[in-house]
Amino acid sequence: WIPQATAEMAILDMLGRIAKRSMGELVGDIQNTEIAIYRANNNRGLSAEESIARIKERQAKTNAKAVKFKIGGRRDIPEEPVGRTERLIPMIREAFPEDITLYADCNGSYDAKEAIRIGKILEEHQIDLFEQPVPTDAYEDWKATADALNIPIASGGGEVSLRNFRWLIGNNAVQMVQQDLFYF
Image (tube, rainbow, N blue to C red; front, side, top):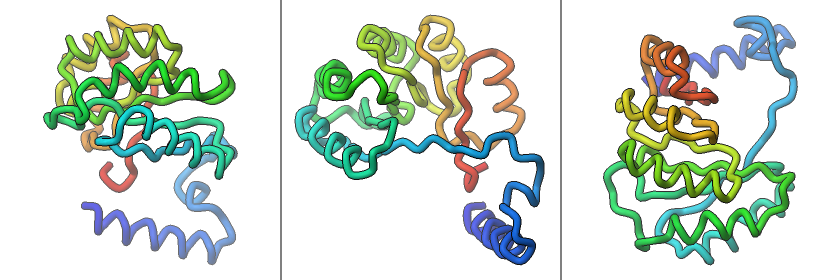
């Protein structure tokens, strides 16, 4: 559906330009006129030290008020180098001032037990958001993770079902929804 969504967004963009209105105004009421931008650029496979240096450099170039860093191995791929997550989390909090929001994204790397363990480390180091701690379709794990932690849980971009979104939100399994519009 991504090619179809691309065509739909291009048409909406064209119609918005003709009407001198934003795409959002074409489809509904605008709820927020300002969008906070975060800087996400941290490849897995780098050491914690290399990751911090890269994230700091790129955040400084953009002056972004938030950064997103990758933890875990991405779905069922083992983390490389081993132990990177546990080294990176405390280092990133020390690397940025309190006014920079820190998002940890693990792309569904964990089951509920491991997500809760990692989530507690994130909480200890005052990380602001835990994104996609478990696989997209592991709904009970989403709920168990959210119930065990105080850090807000964010959905990932891969959910494509409106019913499942309602379940995640209705069961307080996520506190932030950030859907990829092309997938959805």
